[in-house]
Figure (cartoon, rainbow, N blue to C red):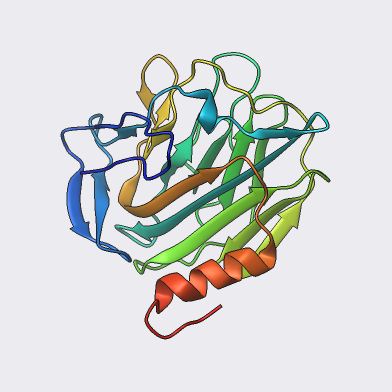
Length: 212
């Protein structure tokens, strides 16, 4: 099962080929890369980015495990059919992207694809956090530590009626499905700080022994 753990309670639909497997925290979703490997979290505007003085803010997070050391695909996103929306992906199977197999890709229709960071080329679980702050700084964290930064072009991430997809990119049909495991997928319309991300990573790695 999958559910929205926030007070918004967005309805969640799970594709028929997503299976439950061991994750970092309780169970997780295993995606096989097929057409029906997806989680649809609906179209709520609660999944749009924040807008601080017309400069969008966002944090996207997940524990990520590749099925192979070169697995690629969509991790999550709410891409609009025209202007706006956002998409987080890994690797080099996205149309129009120049990302290499281990780069983290971030797409927004006003700025195109940004390729940054270096995701581990293995099949272990790693925590991935991507933030875009009000100063326009796009930052990637892997396992709680800063991995890369770049400055994106400012545009709105508001995606209106677009679907927030987990494990796939949805624009009228499904594209670029993920092959691997995703756990604790989170989206926030604020940019989390480096200290916040590090503390969360430590807590999730060892909740019984770490104290903030």
